[in-house]
Image 1: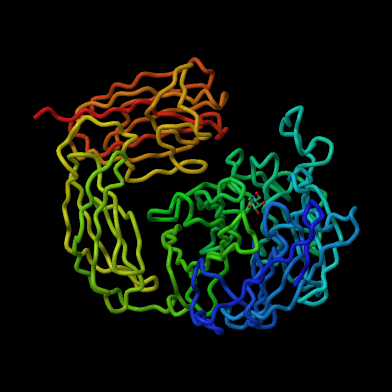
Image 2: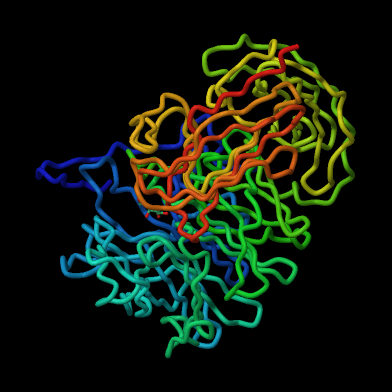
Amino acid sequence: MIALTSSNGSEITPSPIMRPSSVQATPQKFKPGECWFDTTGQPIQAHGGALLKHDGVWYWYGEDKTAHINSEVTWMTGVSCYKSRDLLNWENTGLCLKADPDPASPLHRSKVLERPKVLFNAATGKFVMWMHLDELDYHFSRAGIAVADQPEGPFRLVRSIRSFTYDYGWPENDPRHQRELGNAFLDFNLFLDDDGQAYVFFVSENLATIYVSKLSADFTDFLRPERLGITWARILPNRLREAPAPFKYDGFYYLLTSGCDGWTPSRTLLARAPNLFGPWEIVSDPFVGPEAANSFRTQPTAVFAAPEAPAGSFVFMADRWNPAELRDSRYVWLPFVMRKKSTTLDLRHEWSFDIFTPKPAPTAPVLRVTKKFATSVIEPSGIQLEWDAVPGADGYRAYCDGKPVAFSDSTNLTLPLGLPGVKLTYSMRAEALAGGQSLDSNIVTLSNSQPRACYLSDFYPLKSVTGFGELVFDRSWDGSPLRLGGRNFKKGLLAHLESETIYELGGAYTKLTGIAGMNDTHPGGCGFFVIELDGHRVFEKRLPGTNETTATIEVDVTGAKSLRLLTLAPEGIANGHSVWADMVLTPNSK
Ligand code: DGJ
């Protein structure tokens, strides 16, 4: 057991987390989010990690966070290495890169080492590790590169470097001093292409943009001399994405990224490109269900191809961070299958690799509606759906008005009801990840209550995607009142650019009124506000965040079934806080 010294000098001995007897010593299934123990019964310490397969053995490298107990104790210990043949049972081979006692070293225990990733270089016979090195305030922001002769290490740090020197108009007070020191390097990932060329994806600038660069032949540096568009590229500019997890499928490159929100989980988006240097396009939000907005409380760390499974079978590796006690952060590994150049990521409570074995589509489940909750102030009113398990199914997908809204790997689910007076239909399909979907179950139609005038922000939308974090109801991001043009609003939806919010109106309303603008709390950032009814654009306005500019909305929504609110970033700078204030729906009078 390590004894740790807190900042006030007192000694802290962390209490051990040991495997309870109720948890199997040799797990047979992945249990996303549950504490995962190694072969000695200790919790696996491989956060922000990734896998390397070498000579038939899997190695899992990651951050050892045993010395992060609370905000008082944040010592870095080094990079852990585990090995396994079945990816479920992991033997700890110890720290393969250790913190350095020298206070001047970037590996000193008082500093930050994150997201280590390892490649094997067949030409040099060396194992090469990249890592993000930083100070506690995250302004050092460099790549660390270490090499070893064996997969278990020991790794030796050979470089600690910034990336290229390109001035993208750094502010006077650029916290990372990029004009002088070179562009920053934060969250990153390595990618080995089929032709043996290795690449590094990394977050640069002030978290604004991801870069991708070829690595040198020995993998220990960026390919130099660097040439924009030839050896490296700037991708997803100003999108504020991090935690890049690349993979390749069917000739296309894919990249999962999170939003930038410290240890707080955010929405994960999938980008795709025909070439590593682009053009990259965000193609989907692959997460479905109630916790999709925060990716089931996870942040990506890597994607690997499922072993001995059909092409397109992958595993998403993510961290569920526990910032109060980082050593007890959990791992969430989820299986997914690429289809039609995108995919869906579902939260499963347990699974094993046989989920990738091709099988026939299951038969349809029979849905029972067992409960209808009363409405409340903000109406998370819901219906409880239940069904009997269908043989061969490994999950069930719920549809609301024909759109997929939730997934369950058990036999019940609670879904929200819609706006007052709006009839929604609910149905369910059983599915097998490697076998397709059943036909629809019986279809259940439910309506909340009589239509009445209501604020949009009192109801959850059918769907919402925001560029950062989640849709916020009736307040600003920091909890203060919504404020447009110097005026406070009690009601409204706040969405970080770029955003999409969909409400089902079901033809029950005639008028939508409100005020659009960029929140005064975050001046700057220009928003392009768009309202669509059943796919037709009925309102658009470009509104710079000048504290002055707002637009009044009065839209005839008679007969419209679906309302789509979009806030886009016309200048490509996606850091504004867009507000739909006082949005009131008025119903049909009859
Ligand atoms: C988000 C990053 O993805 C993590 O690796 C870590 O750097 C946290 N930020 C720190 O707040």
